[in-house]
Image 1 (cartoon, helix red, strand yellow):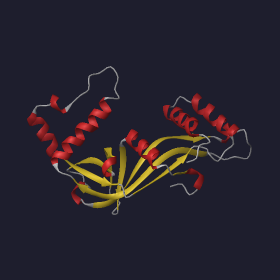
Image 2 (cartoon, rainbow, N blue to C red; image 1 turned 60 degrees about the vertical axis):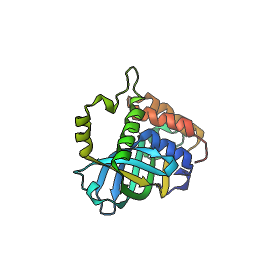
Image 3 (cartoon, rainbow, N blue to C red; image 1 turned 180 degrees about the vertical axis):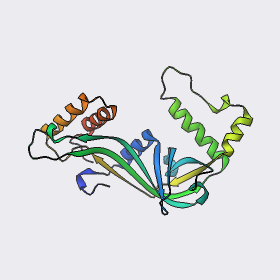
Length: 203
């Protein structure tokens, strides 16, 4: 987390909503192995459900303790966008870290999780009938499933950083939002929208 307390994100429900919307994490274990995984949030069981290729070294070392880092959009902030003088460049962003024990799950839960994961993201695609696993031949699906392993990450602790210029004046925030909206980058637009959403709200 960012060391400045004003940027500490403390609302667990908001952090889980952010994590659920992103549904992609970087996992790092105690041996500094790294994996990028898609996941769903199983809030009732306070865990994330994910999967790896069986060839991934991390999948062969389960169970293990890991930290999952879920990042949102980020944006460079130029000092020229502030109304105030004597400022320096910085970066605005949102990120959530989840610490817990990563353990394997059985094939039934893996299949159910994959169906839920694809349904969630297929539902976000407009003007298309959702893809489902039953579009695959059973032999093809079984072969694909044998190449991966499912895992559950217990949510032992969750912490977040929401650094969206909360330490600046309203005029400075307005200047940053206006500049990011003029940017050709969709990431900048996303950060501007998040700044407008949370400005002056407690974290």
